[in-house]
Image 1 (cartoon, rainbow, N blue to C red):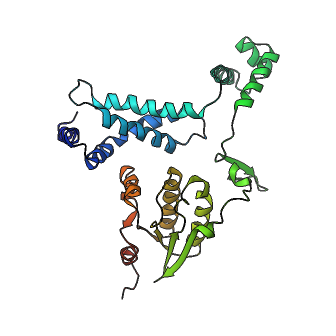
Image 2 (image 1 turned 90 degrees about the horizontal axis):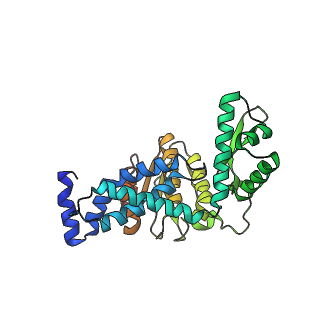
Image 3 (image 1 turned 90 degrees about the vertical axis):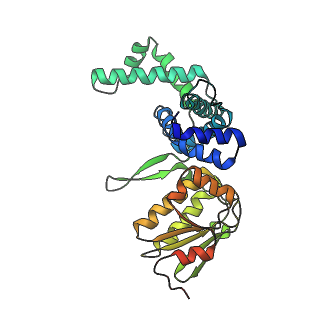
Length: 304
């Protein structure tokens, strides 16, 4: 353990102060990214690394709260085990596929890859079955079991062929109409002041995953309407922020910057701001305590 971090550990062990704990979380946050990246490389495309980081962050927090600096164990070693365990526990909780089916799927994938490298083409069913020591009927039965256990992730991107030979990417969920979904205009209040579009979230739960796509679309329209958009997001009524919402905000920020615009966030509650601090997103966004201060922070705005 580095010498400069030891006083922080002693202070946390003595007082259990949340501020000190959060400093420790920020110090060791790269461990979460490291473990999530290693685990994510072997998972299906629909498993989002951001979600793995969220699961791992819970493991890191647990490790910090339970670690005893007096024991002869490096914190990094202890934390990596806890982070990995937290991620695997969450993945297992979401995974209902029998181990035998998953094992067979891995065997078939491995056999196909080996045959492709050897014969430089896609192998036939007969060749795959022979490689595995199966009959063709047994192979087909296994493939049927595997297909029944597969779940198409609704946010996984599919390529739609175009007339020019190219293709656009669309998420499967965007092809399904949800007639009960709330109108994004009903959960957002948009006003304008001094050339700044002010967006207020009028429902404190609108930043759950279910509404992110429609809200992102509405914000995207506001950005596209202006050559140099100035956007102020007022979080005064919001008391919950999902990982999907963070991803949406990062995307909105990038779109604003691409148009040489400005984005400000205001009225963020302490428990939500803590999420920004832990994820270091407070360094990416300009966050002001109040709407008035945020308005004054825009460059090129006339102040009276």
